[in-house]
Image 1 (spheres, rainbow, N blue to C red):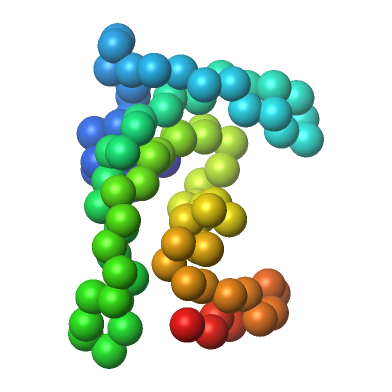
Image 2 (image 1 turned 60 degrees about the horizontal axis):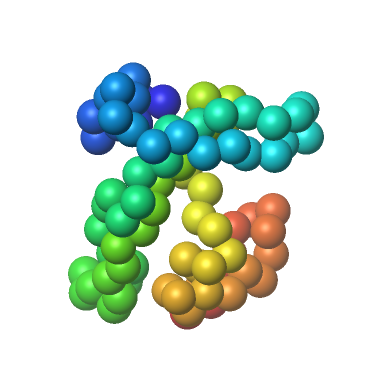
Amino acid sequence: MELARKLDLWPPHPDTELTELGTGGGDIIAPYYAAAARLELIAEGKTLKELRVNIIVNTHVDEVILSDTVTGELGIVLLEERSLEVEL
C-alpha cells in the first residue's frame, strides 16, 4: 500500500473506476486505473522497453505483481519462480 499511497492511488479518489477480483478468499472490489503508469525495463543502465500499464490496487497484497501479459510484452521468461531468476 505504501507504493499506492506514493503514487496518489490510495485512498482511491471518488471518481476512480472499481473492478471485481476473484481471489482464493472470495471476490473483492479494488480500484482500477487504466494506463496509469509507465513501466520501464532497464538493464545495464539502458531502457530496453517501455510500456503504459494498468494498475489495480489490492489491499490484500503488499507487493507489485506483473501480469502474464506485461511480462510477455517485456520479453521476460521465468526460469525459476522461487528464485525469481529471469532471462531476457
